[in-house]
Amino acid sequence: MINIKSLIPNFALNWYHFALAFVGAFLYGFPSRKLVVIGVTGTNGKSTVVEMCHQIFKEAGFRVASLSSVRFNVNGEVRPNLLKMTMPGRFRLQKFLRDAVAAGCKYAVLEVTSEGIKQHRHKFIDFDAAVFTNLTPEHIESHGSFEAYKKAKGELFRSLAGKNKNEQYAIVNLDDPNAEYFLGFPANKIGYTLNSEYTAGGVKSIKAEEVKNFAGGSAFSVEGIAMRVKLPGEFNVSNALAAIGAALSQGVDFKTIGKALENIQSVPGRMEVVSREPFTVIVDYAHTPDALEKVYSTVKNLDANRHTINGKMICVLGAAGGGRDKWKRPELGKIAARFCDQIILTDEDPYDEDPVRIVSQIKEGIAVAQFSADKVLEILDRREAIRKALALAAAGDAVIITGKGSEPWMCVAGGKKIAWDDRMVAEEALKTIVR
Image (cartoon, rainbow, N blue to C red; front, side):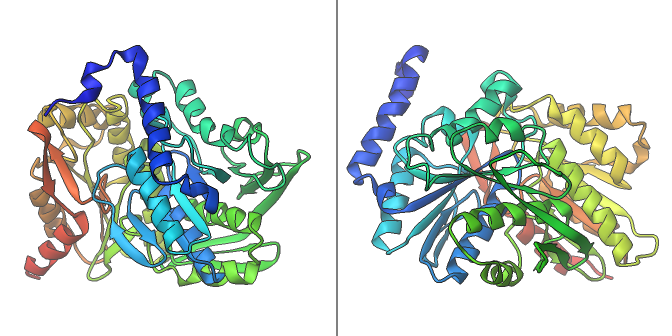
């Protein structure tokens, strides 16, 4: 089959993507015009914020649709996202929005990626609100620089500029160094924070107070109102604040917000606890240095709060291939060396790259950190790597499996996809371990 894109000169690709976006919206009747559309962008936390927003609007009595790297949810009709693509192509995206309209939804909450924006997948979608979670280096090879990556994210906020100023909202993480940039677009501004004392005019600020993290989640208060989420870690408090900001922009009250957040049991593949006894097993999507550090530091705190004795962190770690963000591989190794007691290096999504080379680049960072070489194992077969990690664990330990979360495929050489789920692999392995 001929790949049409391969026949198009690079200078014309922008027009190609733009034209496809228009045709998709036209064919499906510009469905976003009949919805309140909220876009969530940033490096980390997007899927969790989308899930939280969905549950809040549902609790408020609205029909709602949401789309993320985890799943498609149209008013309770849920399908896993099997595309290995966070933000679908223009036709799928517009069809999703039309399905939301057909289901009587008022709200659609979309995870918006820089790669999707680069290909104009956000065009001809009328966004009413944009949420910014955080920004750390990612997709640098694709965008050319961190600044270009940031500007791609900013295009979501720029797309608000043509809408009624009384109805458009920018919800921005004030704790991120790039907050000012995202607050610079025309919109009603809501900032959220755990630490900042931001006082600039025109920004409504919501701050988490009395933050407490424990094994079963996190507790905090906003404007004197107690909130609780069953997702551990300060980064999940920040995610909750992002969803709170989006809900407040639409007039949802704090009581409804609090009830919805507390009812969320978990988000697939995001700090998801597969087992608690005799040791803890956690699966998380973390695949950037910032996300990995937050996951590891949270687990360290969980161990402390659970009063475990001699608890070790056994970490299953890989990095994506296909030439993607090679710079971060040694950085991931350095972070693992700081937090983990045992590291098992394995495949993640090697694509057509040599898996041995990918692992060796992670090891470069581990070596720089002067981590004990006898505490590092290389097991390229990811299933065997997970089995080994579980076999090494004892009561009170924590096994942390990162990089894929709830992703349904592993991408290997020759364009092949292997059906996969870290959670199921871990559960199956746990059944076979004899204690």
